[in-house]
Amino acid sequence: MATNITWHPNLSYDERKTLRKQEGCTVWFTGLSASGKSTIACALEQLLLQKGVSAYRLDGDNIRFGLNKDLGFSEKDRNENIRRISEVSKLFADSCTISLTSFISPYRADRDKARELHKESGLRFIEVFVDVPLDVAEKRDPKGLYKKAREGVIKEFTGISAPYEAPESPELHLRTDKNTVEECATVIYEYLVRENLINEKA
Image 1 (spheres, helix red, strand yellow):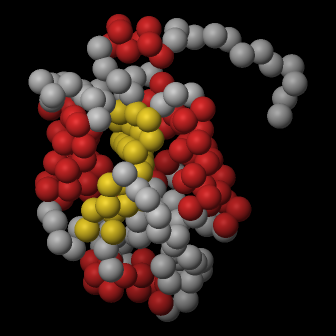
Image 2 (tube, rainbow, N blue to C red; image 1 turned 135 degrees about the vertical axis):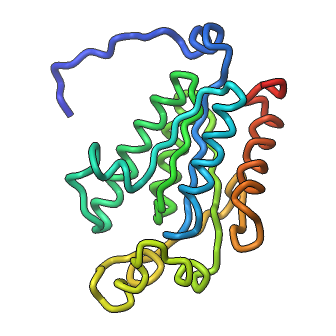
């Protein structure tokens, strides 16, 4: 870490909250590829924006086209991928925006670090386990990734040749083989209302 840098103080979170009239937080979607993370996050983003709530979606694939385009899929690179997005999502939350992050984020320790990073700044972190049986995810396989992983074309693919560590106590546990995208988005929205993270009248 560089030593010739100085932290410049910003407006406080409470000052921003008062001015923007909104809380910030991170809703962290985790689950296997093809579990429905990005689809639900997109539906929730649209719902929140329609309600006048500032929200922004950070998608695992999209981030790798820019910020994280230098990273591969080794365990080390996956760790760094999540470290970076944890910092970015924290900045969005601190700006009083609801940050929606949809990343496989297979390692429990990395997700715990993301949670702790938010906690240290007094920001809420809501872990959403988007759960689906592996065989259902493989049948969906919209990008053909599971097929390639089974054939050995893709190495270190989560759920096939690399581990996925399911959350032990997520704030929300969604089963996308049993509920629609709209139902899942509504469950999260109602949770945010109950937790006073968005105004029920929004």
